Image (tube, rainbow, N blue to C red; front, top):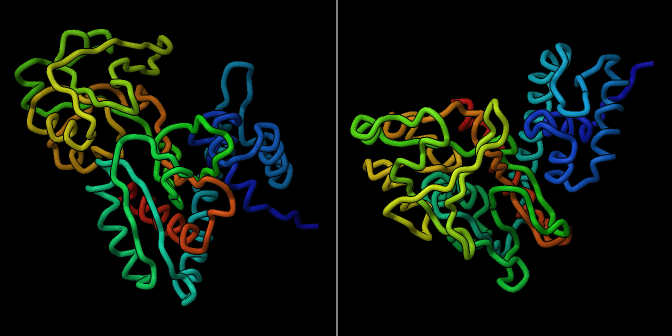
Length: 303
């Protein structure tokens, strides 16, 4: 008898691959680590192969898992496109959508996508809050928030947009020509590091996942801002080195305005997600927005 492969199991498999552990995948998918492990075991049983090689210290894809991953991604993408196509045909989507988003990715990447989303759904009234301070979904009466990183509040509902995103250290070619390229994280202490404020704290302890393990460096520099978009612009003009989400600097890297200093896997994970206060906030408009943005990120990263 042919065994049925569950879509949820595929999502757990792909997310676990992207973030490197069942516990991290579970946090992103709002399930328990035990359920995430069971989902992958169920998928392995359906396929008749081992997708991961497990040990006490690490989790990595098996050869079969490597071969299957691309097909799993394609299946999830096709289902997402189908949901989006159906959603775009529903006339009942209307009302106010209150959304917060970070400054850099918000202004430079999401803003034109939101224009397109509203053109598809003209009955949606969009209210935007653009800030790098963590928005309070309850007190600010927000329907959803686009955020980087793991959630501190496990009661919130998180929907993945780009779970494999990481931070990256980068600088302009001009800065590197004048000051040299750091060869190790420790050498950042001798460079002008551009910092930004998150919440009430300045982001000045930069951590990296190096072959020697996690390394954390206290950095300093002559410029700080509570607007991460401004900090990125300083880096583009050669004012110093920045440690930013790769999504924030993708266009700068592709154009050569910025270059990466360390290997991509050195950077801290910085998954991007759409966050809601509770499941009752998952209105048709929020669900459509999530499907729309996930499809746009998939296309953007594959260009």
